[in-house]
Length: 148
Image 1 (cartoon, rainbow, N blue to C red):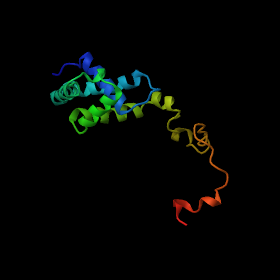
Image 2 (cartoon, rainbow, N blue to C red):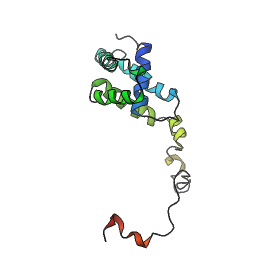
Image 3 (tube, rainbow, N blue to C red):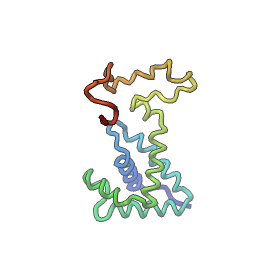
Image 4 (cartoon, rainbow, N blue to C red):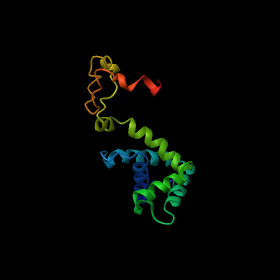
């Protein structure tokens, strides 16, 4: 049976998830959920555990991933694309981050509204972070797509 991730593996995986899906406003706890899910995948699965070990070893060569600057971390992840570790963290993060009501709240998304009757009568147009569209189209701009 596989052992739990080491502190170094947890810290590196958290940093990898942050670099893959960068949201400055999200706390580490949102990304820690990704780490816990990756660790759960590794528990009892020697192939996944080996992929994590090999992936982190590659990211730490020649300098530990977490000690590199942001540009070097991004380059290292681009080089790791398609590896089992990269694919595991990417697939886990997209679910654990974006299917998380706490993250939705941080983004200003109120969540699904089917159980409340839909969005039509619930402020579907209350997106205050988007600019107001013009009331009338500019005739000088020409037809859509720029064709004249």
